[in-house]
Length: 261
Image (cartoon, rainbow, N blue to C red; front, side, top):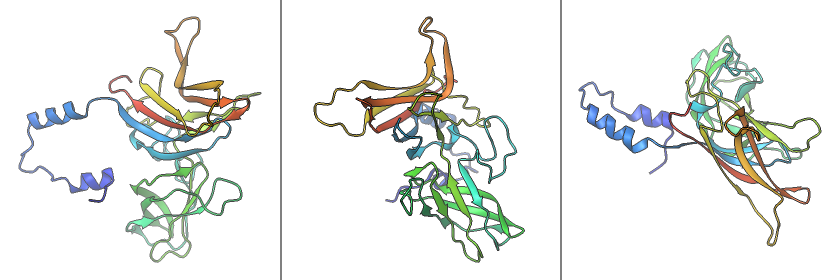
């Protein structure tokens, strides 16, 4: 059986007009799913700002139209996870059908296309350009800066998305290591990513036999060394693995603890 996206699963559900689902059923569902929730899986390298995003839960990262807590951002604004860097031309009015993206531009110099696959969207046309969109399938394997083109029926010029991702690499002054700003979903009410509500799992992607690691850690946020009960650096992922000045890519998973907002 083919795997389905959350959107497709929800569309397949009955509307429960007959009220066949009772409180006991709902309680059993809550009991079965309540626990830490995987919200991100990917590869990061503290030697470069890019990440390879295999999966992220959109309910915990930046919502469409937001930049942090500020709404009203256009779909072509650089703050967006999916930034429309080309709105297309000749886009028919109204909603399109499903359009599969083609990874046509790579975030990595020298590559002609990115490695991400499976992004499917619907677009809303008005005045000949894209004015809104919906994600049908997220796909995976995209990197910050990859470009995805969507060739829809009747389009004169295909719209293009630049994938900015849920994590954004940054380096502090005088430091050659990259860490990640984590976007957060303000309208969902899921709150900031903190050391208290986030569990980070990290394994180096590959190590040479006999390697003595000098740096090996991964965490969300920081706590004070003088008072370990004072936490700061919300919405920041700090992950490092390396030796003798060499950085090693890391498989990273981030889990959210229910209730610890």
